[in-house]
Length: 407
Image (cartoon, rainbow, N blue to C red; front, top):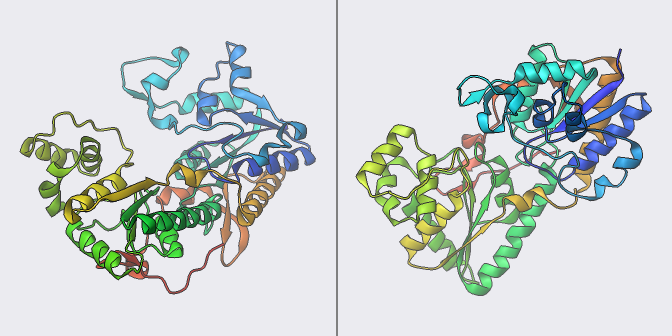
C-alpha cells in the first residue's frame, strides 16, 4: 500500500492554517508516510494531466520537515487555496484537456478521483471550510479515503464546537472595533464595521458582544433601516463621547417592505448588494420599478452589506457615517494560543487516523468529548446559524447572551 498522503487547503485563509500544515507534515513523516502538498486546493487535482509530466510539478510539492519548518510564522496558506467546487466548475476554470460539451459548468469529480488513484495516495487530508468539507464528504461517499480538518473564522461547521481560526479572528475583531471606537469618539460619529458571515452571523455576533458594539446586524434577521437609525442616534446621544458603533455581517438584508423605499437613495455598488440579497424575480421587479441601469450584480458574494447600512444610516440621520470593512483583516495575523493548540491537535489526530486506516472522519472539538472526530458526512447538514431566540434581541439589534461556552 502506498505511503503517500495528500494534503490540501481551500476556502478562506485563517490564522493557524500553516501551523496545522506543519504539524500534519511532521507527524505523518514520524509515522513513516510521505506527505504531498496539493497546490490551490481541488484546483491542483483538476489541473493534473497524467499525460503531461510538467503538470505534476506545477500542482504538487513533496513536503519535508525542513521545507515546512518556518511556515508557522506566516499567515495565509503555504499550499495556496482556491474556492473552486469540482461539482460545478466554471468552464473558464476547466483546463483545456478536460474541455468537452457546451455546458457552462462541469462536474470534474471523475478527474479528481482519477488523479488521486493515479498518484497512489493512501489518503487525502482536507483542511477546509464548510464548502470544502462538503465536497470532501461527497468524495467519501465515492469511496475516496479522506479526512477533514475544519477551519473557518465563522465557527459554523456542524459536528464541532470549534474551528481553526475562530479564536484569533474573534480577538482581532474585538481589537479592531476597539480602535474604531477611539476613532469614532474623536470624530463624534456613527461608525459601521463590516465583518464576514454571509450565511451565519455567529462570529459577527460574538465579536460585537465582546467589543461592546452598540448594535449588531446579522443575516438571520432582516433589519429595518429606520429602526436602526433611531437606535444608533440614541446610542450616540447617550454616549459621553458622542459616538456609536454598528457591526454589520456581510450577508445582512433590509426588511422586504422597506427595500423599494430606500434603494433609490443608494450608490450603484450598494444597490448591487441589495439585488444580490433578493430572489431573481424580486430583483427584476425592483429594476423595473426604479432606474437601476448601471447596476451590476457581482455573483453570490454579499460583501457590501456594511456599505448599504452605512449609506442608509447617513441618509436617515443626516450625519456623516464612517464605514470600515474588517473582513480580510480577520483572516490574517499570528494565531493565538487556542488556534496554535487547535492546529496542532487537529493535525496529530488526523495523522493518527491515517496511520490506523480510519477514513471518512472530520476532526472535532466538542464540549463533552474535547478533541475527537465525527463522521465527515455531518457537514452536509449545512452551516450552523445563530439561534435567534437564545442569542439575539430582534427588536434592539443586540446580542442576547448570558453565558458563553467556547473552546
